[in-house]
Length: 137
Image (cartoon, rainbow, N blue to C red; front, side, top):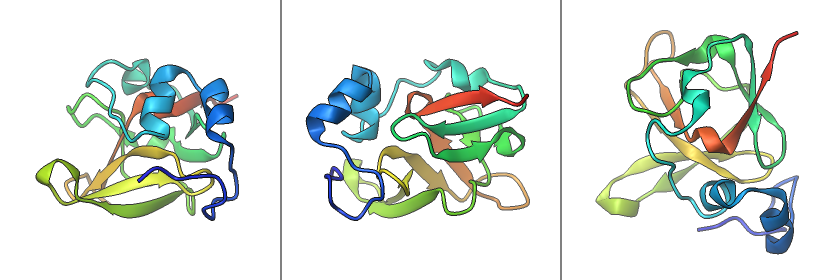
C-alpha cells in the first residue's frame, strides 16, 4: 500500500510533486515499495561520521555510529534516530516481515530483522537510494 497525501504523515506531496522531487529510482523505492539491487548504492560503503536522512523529506533517520557491515548488499543499521521510523506488517513475496518507513513522509525505506549486533540485536536493512548522507563537520 502506497502512502497517499493526507494519510496522516506530517510531510505530504501529490504524486506529481513526488515524481518531480525524486529520481525515478528513488520514487520506485520510497513511493512504490521497490527494492534496489544489492550492492548497487554507494551508501553501502559509506564509513565517514555523519547522518543518513530520508531522500524524500530530509528527516534524519540514522547516525553513522549505528551503521554496520551486514554482508547483505544494503546499508544496515542497528538503531534509528528516536521517532524517525514507523513500521508496518509486510506480507508480500510470501513472507512475513516488518517494513520500516519514514515517520515524517511515509516513504518506504526497507525492513527490520532481529539478527543484528548488540546492543539492539536489530538489523535495519535500508535501501541506500532512499537516503542521503551528510558528513559530520
